[in-house]
Length: 300
Ligand SMILES: [Zn+2]
Image (cartoon, rainbow, N blue to C red):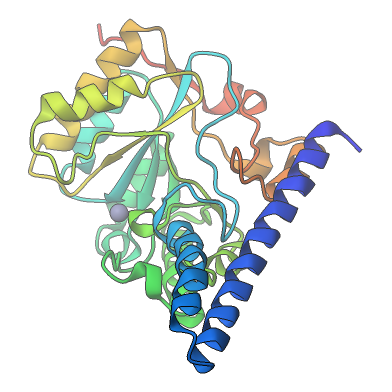
């Protein structure tokens, strides 16, 4: 067995161990409370609850399922991603990406996609990829959805995007990066893989473009997954994209839009089905570069 497979298996064992400890901790705390040992109940419950809360709220936590946080690349390439679209700025954003010969993955909200199918088609026609970002974007309660609610959110988005473009997304980005134990089986059942990010500018909560850009630029490194948003004030996402693409071009970086199973050898594909708590989902980039990479270059 290869070292990478052994690592994947070891990571899966670690995840199962952590989950078992969390469950045992909650059961033991309930037993202590039933016996009136409240101090012991609290001592056992707190660490067990911390494991569960961390797994649910930390966007990169693989506790409840594998998640890709960065690409295993040594070259100067990044995966540019835009969440929450489409919106009225999508057309302008596509023009910016064209000017820089850059490609991106757009994690669309299903109901917004259904309302603007021409923009969804334009994303594909102009060489970009589409990911699933739920149907209704229930940011405040995503972490507490039931399996049935997750199924509705993910499947209806898959169906909506496939109905418009003929292509079912392969990547899923959790709303606000939140998860719980019921999400991962639904992700897998819908043929998706979860991806988070390695860099973001907090563009939805910080109105200062300079600060947002500084955060994104600090995150530029080989294999970085950079997250920006649509749905900001009019004109803002194309402006931020322009500034970021300028920085990427100045540093000699290019953009890639990896797709999991299309691009992978058998070993790596197998790893996608496993769990790697330390480093997230394994994915290969290089086999896809000829088809999907574009060098970010300053417009002439
Ligand atoms: Zn979002």
